[in-house]
Image 1 (cartoon, helix red, strand yellow):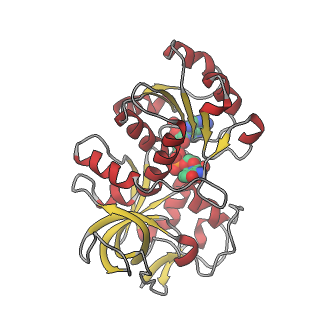
Image 2 (cartoon, protein in one colour):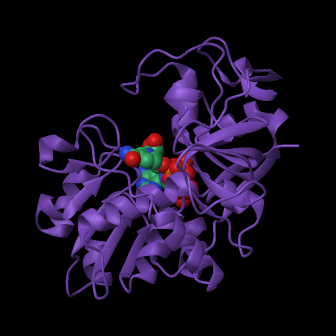
Length: 309
Ligand SMILES: NC(=O)c1ccc[n+]([C@@H]2O[C@H](COP(=O)([O-])OP(=O)(O)OC[C@H]3O[C@@H](n4cnc5c(N)ncnc54)[C@H](OP(=O)(O)O)[C@@H]3O)[C@@H](O)[C@H]2O)c1
């Protein structure tokens, strides 16, 4: 099969499309012919060689965790899905490599709703799982006032919509140019950076019940001040947050259980017209290096997705 891959850590230029060994579905897995695959900031960090607490990579390495596509192998013990079904989900990248390839093996998936394009569905899964896990951990429900720090990116746009769908009031931070975009997703937008505590107090005079830090920009002390207690703040990207008593949610060793059930919830919301996956850029697989550069810029509005021919 063909795949986007690299054989040494380095800049985006180490990526190229070439031949790779086909993976096959094991027990509890499905294989898909990939139609689209999302690019996440973690893909670019791993490619750069930055430590992510991961075991060594097998070379060549295929990046990409999220994908949409058509099922072409159903593993032992799998029910409720058949060859030919359209699905979206996540790969087990450590075991079988990534999704930026002709074929990928999914460890978790849901039926792709017609309401989401291949590209939207292909970029959705990690964001949906992460948002579901952290909103659950924060107890976000009808009546919650939630602050999302870093609301305009891949995870933020999804977290905002899933929280709004739960009946929460959501304040989301982004740069000024993204405020109209955030309002369109159902959030009350505000700017990140100095003065955040005062701006949020003005927007939520009754207080903020929960804070989700997606940006990991070092604003955790302000976020604790806004929530009133570190127990009501969860970060997904600030590895120094523990010194302020704030939990880092992840699904690695010692982390939280993954919330894969969120995939079907998001699919149902999409069918109801209450969930979409904003796309910052859609590029062909061969433009993987450009996609990684865009992701590393840190200012994607929604998801960056590669299409697979
Ligand atoms: N622990 C986990 O389970 C987990 C899971 C998934 C992702 N992550 C991590 O979560 C982080 C975010 O992922 P992502 O996919 O959402 O990234 P992303 O799509 O690249 O995020 C880009 C967004 O970040 C915003 N942003 C940049 N600087 C900001 C700041 N100082 N304050 C607030 N917003 C800011 C940008 O908004 P503007 O352009 O308006 O500035 C842009 O919309 C990454 O570090 C990723 O590795 C962790």
